[in-house]
Length: 219
Image (tube, rainbow, N blue to C red):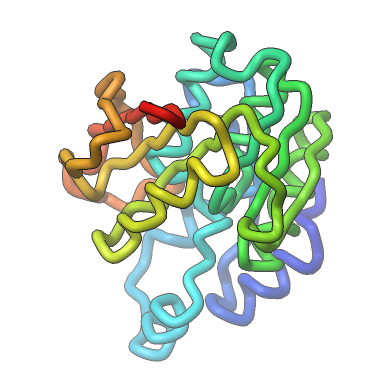
């Protein structure tokens, strides 16, 4: 199967020898177009490092929190079954695709990056599901039953987003392994989940522990 041209071209501009390949996600029935792990097993040049830091191809990874949330929805489909869902900062689209598979009525994959939207489209097709797409969360109406969020709180500067999620959805599920034990009156930790990033970035063990939080409007 040939990788989507637009995504492969963008990746090649960052890392000339990197390739996208279809990757089965462990513990799920999902697969995604991800950076081939073999192309990550080398030292990067200073120029490559600069490009990766300036324009990270995060849509080419399945981050631990996304994988954990996808598995959780498969095991607990009642969170999304028959509901209107928005996947915020969708990246590869893994959480949104899992929501469709678990019976969501509608899923909007939302990301500022056009390449992430392209990745969501390609991955939706790969998994035989349909998504809708948005590049502007704040242009969306307050009509969603649930906002899904995975690996968005990687910086405490993003914590103000926690208030914004409930302006567009009645509830939110937030999965994150980077910012631990944030204090917000609306959010309660539901579970601790274990997952890892694909391709493997040899991250510290602590980043394999994913916190799952829930919030509801009018808490």
